[in-house]
Length: 119
Image (cartoon, rainbow, N blue to C red):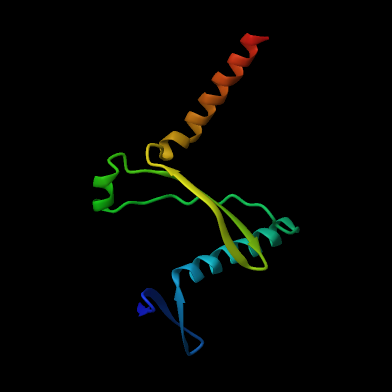
């Protein structure tokens, strides 16, 4: 890893050449590749996508977030290979347990039962 203009750089050797990337460039490369794979799989241009990334915490972060989780959402646009963050928000009181299948299924079962009672 190298430092350039106050940003950590990831240094790799590729085909005999040294390349340096900031973390944003690595993220962009990964998302671009995911988009290419999805388009090849579906056989169509992908314009909208939801990417879910689990959050992992080290010991010091766990002490600040005792439940060990957060729920964060970012909205992005991708135009001509440029990723632009439009909005971001989070809730430190929600985590993966709040969004697992069991809880989601229970929520929608209860919601449907409530709708039927109203009929």
